[in-house]
Each structure stands twice: as C-alpha cells, then as structure tokens.
Length: 424
Image 1: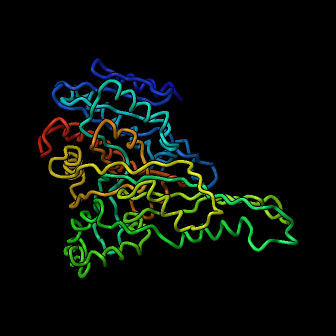
Image 2: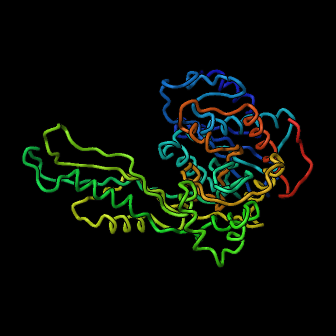
Image 3: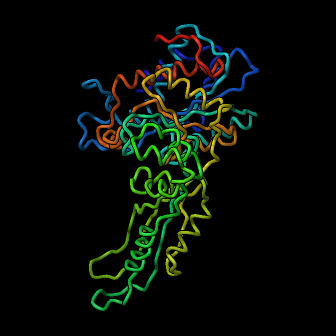
C-alpha cells in the first residue's frame, strides 16, 4: 500500500516544497512562500489511528470503502480526513500553479494517539533548532457543533483556543493477603473502592468564568430563547446560575471543570484469596485555569487516606490560552474562512478542546494555537469517533478540502474577504 502514497507525494513535491521524514514515520513539509517577510504558519494532522477490530463493522475498518455517500474506515474523522484534506488542497492549488506568498509547514505526526513524543515532539525540536517561529498553528480539535447544547437551535462553529491538560493517575493500596474465610475488616479492594468513590462523588471546582467559555456563551446568547438569552446576556448578574446550569449536562460540564474519570480497576487472583494489591487508573482532564500540581493536591485531599498511594503515569499542564481578539491572525483567518465556506453558520466562538492533540508540543514555536476541524458534529455522530463504523460523508470531506484550499489563500492576504480561487 506504500506505492500509491509515494506516487501521491511525488505530485506535490516541487522546487519550493521540501519533504522530510522525522522520527522514522512522521512527515514534515516545508512550503516556501514568495514573501519571506511574512511569518510562516503550520497545519497539523496525524496519520495514526486507534485500533479497530473487525467485529461490528459494516465494511473492513481499514478498507476506506465508499457506501451510500459515506467513506468508511478507522480515521475518517480522527484524523485521516485532515491528513488527506491538507494534502489534496495543496495538490489542487499546485495544479492551478498557485505559489503561496506566506510560507507554511505541514506536520503529519505518527503517534498522536500515544502522546506524540516520537512524532510531533521531534518535529517541534527540529524546527526550534532551526530557529523557526510561527505566526500560528491550526490542528484538529473542535467542530461545527449541532445539537450538543440544550436549547440552542442553530449550529455554531467553535475554534478552540486552549485544550485541557491531563493526569493519568494510578491509585494503589497494599494490604496483607489472606484467605477469604477469615477476612479483615477492610481489604485492599474495599479501601480503594471507597477512595475512588470519593473522587467520583466530589467533583473538581467549577472554573466557569476562567477561560473562553464565558465569552462563547455571551456570543451565543441571542441564539437562545427566553429566559436563557436573558441569563447569558447579563452574566454580571446571572453568572452563578449559568455556572450551575453548565454542570447539568455532561458535555457542558466538561467545559467548566477538571473532569474525573475512573477508567481501569484491577485486583484479585482467585475467588477465595484476599488480594494484597488493588489498583485503579483515574483520568483527569485539567481545566486551563488549573495545573497538574493543583489537581493532585485536590485529589489527595478528597481521598484523605494515607493507605492509598498516588503514582502519576502521565501528566502535563494545559497549554496557555491563545489570543482570540481582532489582532489574532490565526483566529481571524479561521473565522473568515468558516464564514466563506459555511455561510449558513452565523456564530464563531472561542472554546476549549476537552481532548488532547499534538499541538501542545509546538507551544515553544508560537503563542497562537487554534483547534478546528471543518466538519459538522452531532451527538449521534460523535459515537463514530474511535467507534464502530467510523465514517465521513463524501460531501463533508469535499467541504473540508475546500476549507483548507481557501484557508491557504486567505493566509496570503489580510484577514478580510478578498477574491480568490473559490472553485475547485
């Protein structure tokens, strides 16, 4: 399967485009623009995907088959759509003999799903060693959301200007093993179960008002009916009420606090043996207003049991919030392109990505990191991300290519509507 890929790469490799392989499997393209006075930017995507067993799929998960107007396959939403969309948009521009004014990079990581340390991290280090500084970065992340917020009738585009940090925390309890016929008052499983129950029943603090979520809701206020529009338009008065309302929905709750998810529990070797060790993994997604150390301290205070050991498996702080005012070039270019390619979308708001991307590895190269996937996402389609029968409609993919096609041209101009090659 590598021959067609190499043939495709040959199409886009021209004199002003440089291709490098980094970390054995990641790809870095440098597209040299005609105006060296313009600061370059970067488009990100990742070529790796999560596993996909055959069971339950309507087509083989790695077939890429088209059926009933949809392209099926693992990665069609996360994130081969961006990989191919970027490369195909570039190819279409080259066919038209378009030479960009502003230089840009395309970085395709190969290990985003497993922290990106051999892909994005190495590309970032390479560019830093070369003295590269970027105007902004665009990566996957948020979408055009449709139906996720109760009471909001119309879809809206969210450009994430931050993403959450992470802690994968292992809790462990060690006790003396024994026979189940004469059990002690407390076992390792019981102690640990009580600890994780306290974590689940004690949410992290509500941080509403710290970060872009408050501004996003204010911009969306007029899209709601009464009385919600009144509450959101007068946040100075109704902020505590709005904060509590955000907690009621699991999607909006993730925007206002560090979330706590118990994801793994392991103990026991035999039905009649009291185990010596019990372990649980808790996944914290850290709100941009908090840090790893703050969350760890809160977790220890909630557990409040010295018998429970804390072992940090992975952790990183949330990256800084990127600017999203009128002078933020990357944000304004995205807004302009969204309004051109999706004219039915009236609202573009800043937000926080609750997942993690490769983009955090590039915070040494820029202060402007923006996360947006030019696709509609509905609650019923969200299950396809990392799920069975992951798919993207042909129409949606074509629109994504058009978005990138226009974005590259918009980046060569001031962030305001200008004539360019609309037609593919």
